[in-house]
Length: 306
Length: 329
Image 1 (cartoon, rainbow over the protein chains, first blue to last red):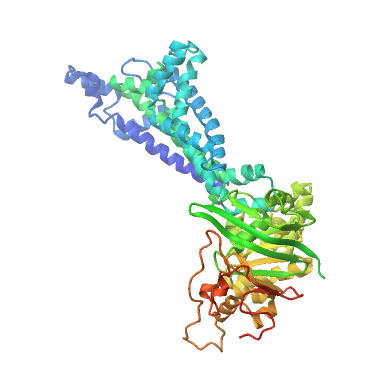
Image 2 (spheres, rainbow over the protein chains, first blue to last red):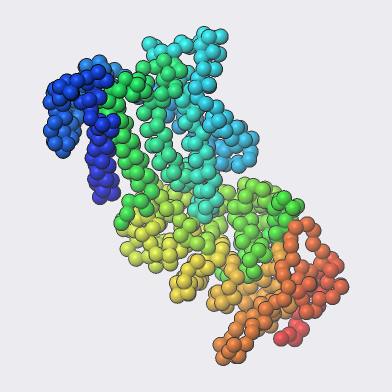
């Protein structure tokens, strides 16, 4: 098991190095960054001065190592637009997105798993049919529309919750529900199909042949095997939710990472974009690595040699 | 008279399908006696596995099970056999399956899978249950059983996994063991070992063993009694020796003729197969199900009921054309 974890961590490290190199390269995507910073009216001398001031005149490898080195100490550079440290800007925004993402994820999971199990126990039964309708609508309705409708109904007509913003915790209620409804169907369906497959296996039948009650058969024998694909899917879903939904954050006027990324792209504030991409990529690497390790905990066959 | 451990009369299993009711088991009478190894033989789809599942109460919800009499371990299971059997499973009747690779849960240790049943049903603590598991693993020939309790199924070979399945079935010390094609998924040398093991356990523990198979070689090596099943009914039952030496039902004779005998069957000669196909089981069937493929079949074979000729020793055959004692072959 330790060898497996070590191996996964080495792989994750390699991916991190690659990801950081690509994020670094983004700076040079649009040509010479010094000219880009100098702007349309900038003179050649200005560009040259900027090149020296920002260190663009040094060899690429030196610049990369320097950038990685400061990123490791939490220094993600200066925002070109605000001229303050990028880490400060992101620090102000990240908690909104994390709260939104984690809460939506938990809500989706809490709904998806029991519903998926219940649907699988009686395929084509009434629970299964209701779950299917919920899943199809959840996938089909665009979240911006659902968000706007929710604001009109619960914010404007009934006045139960704030219309927008994240000043109070009530402001999170609608966006969390809308976002989790978007993430729930896939997790519910994969739980359902995994459960249906596993319930038909011989080892579930063998467990029943031992005289175990159905509850034990479902939770000890079936669920453990059925959640393996869900773990991998959930890691990607959580990554998706944590990277900030630009749509949801815009509809509910939440100042999260998604909106920040969008605004920074429009302002050509490359260091901010670069930092956001780096953070989110590393987050994905961490989540998928965690999912792999969790799967290995659940399924001994994945651990390799016993 | 030996003790009867299971008595089921007129067992019927039907399954609802899109094309109508599929009557897969059409009135099976079956007794399991102490010390007996009864082999239920028949081709795929004849209802032998469904019969076993019905005896275990493991059929899916959409299966409809009825019987005139269903007695096991002093319980009358004629009404609601599926729910009443839940209490008896593991303790009074246990089952081993065809493919030991899929019948063991890959994510739980062998020790956990062996002990979970008795810890619940007998209230054993972990130490006592582990001791029982070690005893059973030792009995089925798994070496170093203590150390192997913490291993997962994938660390064992196919033959070892089937031994573990057998140990798991024996954990609750049941007196009836149902084995559904227990050697089909194993290679030939392992098959012989597993059959020998089952035979030994059957005699040392005094089990009543119901073994379901389509392999007459398996039957010949282990059975004390044989029941031949065709299209949802037992058409002939006899002590194994009698059945092999003097088969009576035309179907049984056809089956035995289809087995090549080394030194007797000429090399390269075509084996005599039974002509025709198994009848469909949807809807009601009248008369003998085998009549269309039977050389002796005539118009009277389409009437009901098919006469059953039996003797006191438990031998019987269901056929219009033959009676026991008649010289055959």
